[in-house]
Length: 447
Image (tube, rainbow, N blue to C red):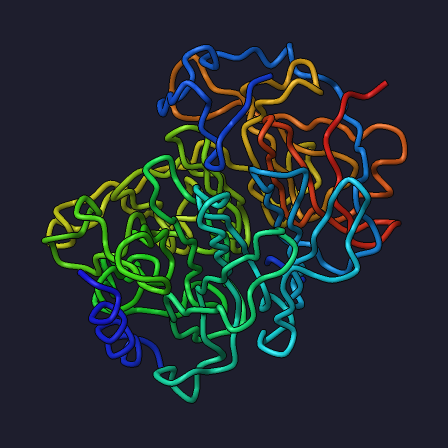
């Protein structure tokens, strides 16, 4: 299926669906895949001991004085990092520091404020040859977005010049647009998988509790599904999977093995039942998605093709509104499809592993911090002097998780966690706000 028919069909359907806060020598390729081509989960990670984890980690600050850094990517052919800021800038950071001239300036294009803005960037897996940069941003309402909607979700691509320091003028091509009913729950992350396809995180449309009702209203005794459970009327509350190498620039096709191809539903959908999948990452073939919760629980999901992660019937592994809630869809909704529990869940509280908004991270594959290898490092918007580390269990779905403290003055330099990244050596970076403004830090061993 080509991009043109897909977009026209979606915009027509979406119009009928519903009249910075967020509520990455073992060299990897651009997708985070180990050099031996392995795409399965590394077996040596199974049962990683919680006791081997460090008690604390330190931060090495690379960039400071920014406003709201939300994403970072690493050039595969140079000592160069691209840092995206929510207001619409993509900076170039090299060994000499932050360049004065940005790679890309979208400030006159982006609808910025609250959870809107430039929310994600990604480099094509063959960036060294293709120079293709993908961006996800909020735009003022475009044609096809209803007048009572907040804005338009835009996925676009640009061509970067050979020197890697500027995009080519007038090179923007729109890949996908999605009408956004509200200004929040915009998700925004992008990631190429080891299969070469682009995965796109889309929130549930905003407001509170998932305002969409669609055709799955009142599943059981008043339990409603919302946009997160609706795979036919819109692409909200989902992870999309697109083949952006088909056709010309600014075009896409749907992979033939997407789970809804040939079935009822929109073919771009890869997984659904998500609220605000703000940050996601691949480790080999495993896709980790941090889904920001509503009122009680935050969660990390291990996402697979056709997976339904429960929102808004469930929040984490719990009922969202009803006293009792189903663990699967009704028989007439995709044949009693299971609602998949997260691998990590934590409450809205001041517990050691607690917080207000989960920020998904990366599996650590570096060498700078002993004991972190194979562990999933993530955080909460409200840092409180710590990050979180989850380790693969010997059995069962739930990953044991504990807090790792920030050493020295790192708790002052990182007061709000906004995002994570991982470079070609498997080292993990954390982006956030603190005493030095918006900053990019690399995790290093505590002294």
